[in-house]
Amino acid sequence: MASDPLSPGDEIPSTRALSAKLGVNPMTVSKAFALLEEEGVLARRPGLPLIVRQRQNEKLRATKIKQLENTLRPIATKAKQLGLNSEEAAAVFRRLLDDDER
Image (cartoon, rainbow, N blue to C red; front, side, top):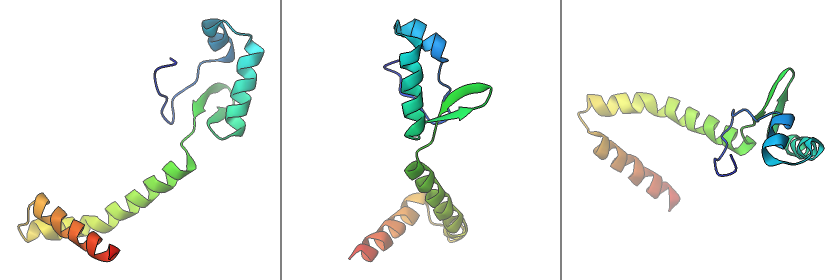
C-alpha cells in the first residue's frame, strides 16, 4: 500500500485494519486520519470508509478543461467538415495559442 499512489475516490482501509497491517496503535492511525481529513485530503462518509478527496485545484482544472471541450466541440466539427485532419487542426490551434502569448 505504501508504494501504491492513491487517487481521488479511493477508499482508505479502516483504522483497525490499517493499524493491524502496520503494527501501530489504532489511536495513531486515527489521529493521522483526522489530520488528513482536516487538511482536506480525506473525506468522511457516515457509515462508509474514508475516501481520498479530489484536490480543489484538480477540480478547478477539470472544470476548466470541460468548459474548453464544450467550446471546442463545434470547432472540431467544423474542422472535420472542412476536411482538415487532427494534426492540421491542432497546428492551427497551437499557432493561435502561441500568437496570443506574444
